[in-house]
Picture 1 (cartoon, rainbow, N blue to C red):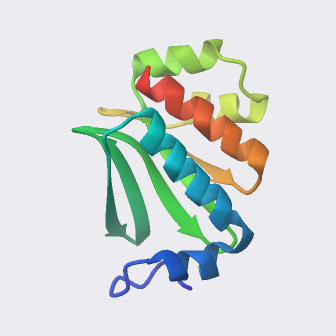
Picture 2 (cartoon, rainbow, N blue to C red; picture 1 turned 90 degrees about the vertical axis):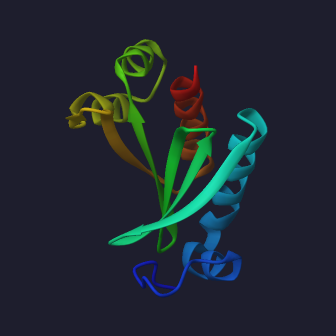
Amino acid sequence: MSFEDKAKVPDDKGLAKGLGPSKKLWDEFVRHVADEYSPVTEAWGFYKAWSLRLKQKKRTIVYLLPREDHFLCAFVYGAKATEAARRAKLPKAIQKTIDEAPVYPEGRGFRLEVRTAGDLETMKKLAAIKMA
């Protein structure tokens, strides 16, 4: 499934087809965020491609961007979260991505690929830093 067709909002079947084996990681992450930061709302949006925004009240936790056989997690960190990430025990490549991310008025925005269970565990840590 192409996630770039504005006329077709991704559904569970389309996600399973497009994400392939990464679909179980997607489902686990969505469940994790919903369990940890309840109440969480989900909203699909389109800008060049579809993304799923996970929010707690008015606060965006993360954007999930489905791709073929994997997905991206897009976070925006303010100054406190960025400092917390620097102190956290994150893989060096992840730390470098955060440090080199462009800074916007709303914070430092970065995207990371999720392809493995290890990637997923890192995303859970990043969500916890964001919500602390």
